[in-house]
Length: 67
Image 1: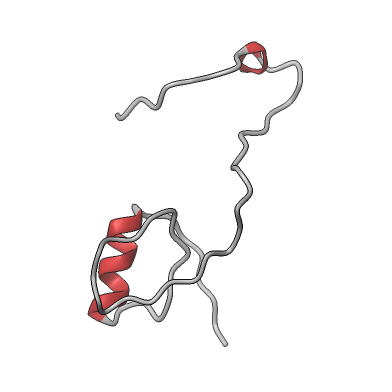
Image 2: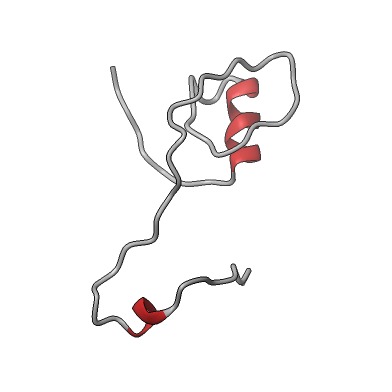
């Protein structure tokens, strides 16, 4: 088995699976389509980790900024 690791938006990865350019993808959400089957990997939350002395470490929440 060959594995390639890269990042993309969940809907793009799902589209690539439907199109046959990917065999599978790990995504955070999937669009409603009967062509896809899914299996939940975990119920655990995601965390942002950084060094304790990083200036952002004092923040308790954040907003995503699209660039």
